[in-house]
Image 1: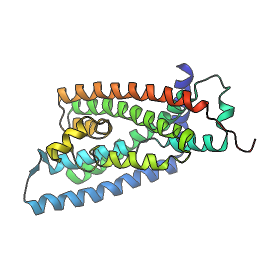
Image 2: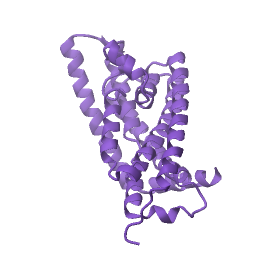
Image 3: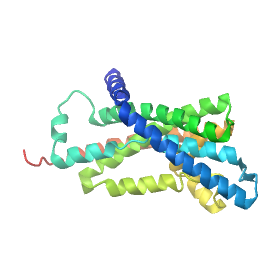
Image 4: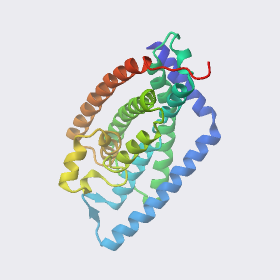
Length: 262
């Protein structure tokens, strides 16, 4: 565990060192949120409503700020794993004194957590500038930090699992595209699940995607102790399930390693 914590810490420091990339990420999330503010302000104005599905306009904007914070912090470690499998570099890592899967998870989280911190700060400042109100509480902030941290762990394990799919199908980006679209739709990225029709909400509630996007953002704007506890347990269960699938995929994948070009 000490080795993997060291890997996480080293990659986190590397991420912070690239200030230009950090600045561009901040500009990007600021642009996205400016568009969301204009869009939802128009929707509420045209509808002539002060609330939609229990969300005031300011709450909706803060909710979207938190979904963007999480989604833009997600892992793309599958790209690196896929390339290492396809070009044969993976074979050289098998003799190293650490778990390949554990290393990739720790390395990815080392990049994810600094991005999430930056996104959270920038998103909060941008939304505060537009709304002039903070739609949260101390419980909401702490709950968001807990759930978003677990969400990033779950997202990373899924990303590593997608990367290991290269053992079987080589090109894994279509798998990631499907995964990302599910996060955007039934995960509650653009719309809170409270606005979904009942049948779609029931489907979303049994899938892991809402635990990555909806649950942390919803907890931030309107803390609910029961929702928080259920989300935390759900995240832990899905992380455990992903861990089992990772172990199985890795065991099967090692048998299929083919080194290309030496």
